[in-house]
Image (cartoon, helix red, strand yellow):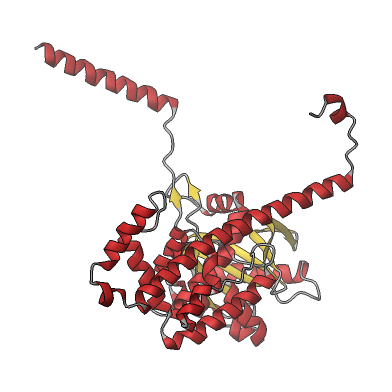
Length: 395
């Protein structure tokens, strides 16, 4: 047992602090690897069970009620385990069948290769695991090999994807987006409902007309058509830009996650002096991959053409006062509650700044707590109502 005087005699220096930080980081990584490993093992079991239901032709061999019977037998054998309902077993079969079409085999291999590359570039957040099953060799079915990227999202995410997506390209898109953005099941459902697979790369912008192809293509990937602000809560339904901006900047970590990988926060209401006048930019970011500043203007109302003129001015301001020689041209992003595509496109005509216009959704309006005066008034009313009821009862 360590004595108090032994603790007091410690001489902790910078080397100890660095060692402690390293140990903490290693332990967090170990936790992440363990969680991913447990998830991957369960998912691989589900995948192979679905494969066996198909490849063994279980219903033809044992009858149409075999899935329900298997569900009961597994639940009896493992009463503390979840996931063995008949519905879940049918979903396992559906999951395997969704991806096991012969024409999809090559796409799964390509997805695994792309994921490996992604994992190497994001080694701090992704723990890569090679997953191959001995059972697959016995089945001798290449399509039954458990795809590596599948291990990094939850089972309920997979069930949403196979029930909502029309083809493997769309499904793989949402799998990777879930991994990249650490989406919850509900966030994934919102993304699919918003159909970002078809819309995220066609956000209203003029990048192709203004920028060279490599830069324009990269920015097309960066700017979303719609931003999910469901984590934002405001006090009034009639909130303005200032309230929206405060709500976003109060949780800048979540804001950065929603914007996507590569964004670095520079500041809120960043001041610039132009011709003796002070100008303030709502939110200013720097995108590391695109090597450019990103000016974000917020509007808690539908799009108006004059918004683009103001955004264009702010982009020019950053180019003149902040942009360095090694930086690419600054881009502007207007995020508003709604827009008309024709109005946006016409607003871009004649402008030389790369600009994009997007919408947002999901804002929550909190119910304000009543004031003390309102509480007193309500109590007074309740007392009056109670007195009337008591009088009636006596009569």
